[in-house]
Length: 340
Image (cartoon, rainbow, N blue to C red; front, side, top):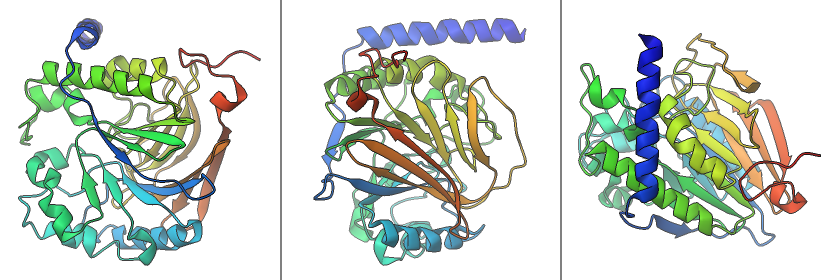
């Protein structure tokens, strides 16, 4: 039965992907401009799965983010979603917004724009409230949309709304309620989103292309791989030469490299509650895994990208550096590396 279910799911995914290629675009993705530093470089922090009113070491992670942010002179912060536990916000007047965000990330270095995607726990609350410009009047750092682009000169960040991809949230939500306003019907929403992403990525002339979503593409932790993203989103990323996919969802820090393309997967979901104690290998190459709390930094210039993972005490756990494949001429238009 499992094989039959997988076959049906794969067939449905192919149908949806084909529909995406033929669907009219709903609208161009919102594009925001964020200047790089004067020398053309960019520094930022990435944190996910954090919104717990300071508990589960959220405050300690925030403190270390402030210190690293000052050291690196960061330009902005990316959140990989699950911004407010357990069930998102109840409205624009929900005190959890300030209790989990404004009152926690108080360091001077963190008073920069925060670009956020929604996670599945955010979808369990009032999604429209979390997307509302009213929140920016309370704290102007908070920039949250479903899917959008941030151009920072040398890099295009493609923020992707991944929660609607997961079929189980629609068909087997258990006791949870998901706010699908503005999303349903699922098939049309995903077809339009995939087409808009593909068109936007094809227009990119940036040295680096980075996709950001909440859900894992590849992971060895509790949630594991997300089949719908592998079937639907990954082909779009690979076809357009996306360098990195950054996500949260699993409450850990990890780096996985693809065996069949240059794309690298980074999970930064250790913003608060962690230590799941789950390890389940997948088909790709595991480069680093830490089942605890922490965050990630990313430093970019025209030539290289450097990722660093930090724990709750600010200790460096792991670093990864890659040269730009576009600069070295090792990236084909298809997004695959050339052989040496």
